Amino acid sequence: MERDSPDEIIHKGTYSLKIEDSVPFVYVDFADGLSEKWLMLANGTVCDIFRPNGQHIHTVTGSVNRTEIIFPAADIINSTSFLTEGNIQYLPQNLKLYYKDNNPWVEGVPGQGINEKLYFENLYCDKGTMQISIGYVSYDKPYLYTQNSRPKKIKLSVEGKFSVIIDLLDTPKYQQINIPDKIINEVLIMEILEVYAGTKYEDTCINTVLFELNSGYYEYNKYWE
Image (cartoon, one colour):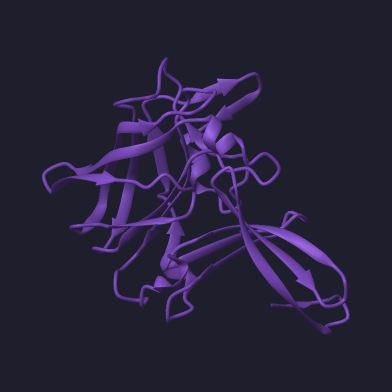
């Protein structure tokens, strides 16, 4: 593990991975005595790192370093509901944010949000993939992941083209879903069918949704599994 200091000297060190309330953190110990704790969400295609100074690093883990092929959600995102707590609104537009810390979409109906929907409008995706990070993800409060509900089973559909049921693992790490057909400026609907129940709150949360424009740009790196 290396880092660039302000004086551009490379500092080497070691790292270890720890899971806190299902959220993966990397503890980095640099040879110069400094240390950092990073929240890291990754799979075989994408990787997001959140550092304590607020810096967000978005990259890919595949064979081609072309992050512009993977983009946040769609131009327009709507939902059947969203949660409002005081002055805070957990809007569907939160899924478009690159820096994802304490900014999920949260459904806003009584119960766990079964049958609540997200609408990704004017989406163009040439048989690429969806990368989804579920739950409430927080650097400072990782326990919010297990305290809130997370989607366990979802349905993805485009009217007149396809409708597929997807089982999700209970992890905030990115999960890759293959889009079965081209989506050409159409509406992709995501429906919550089943959830992992939160230990404290019923609210069901989704942290991030990314899309890969075309499949085949990256060789899936199984190291992250």
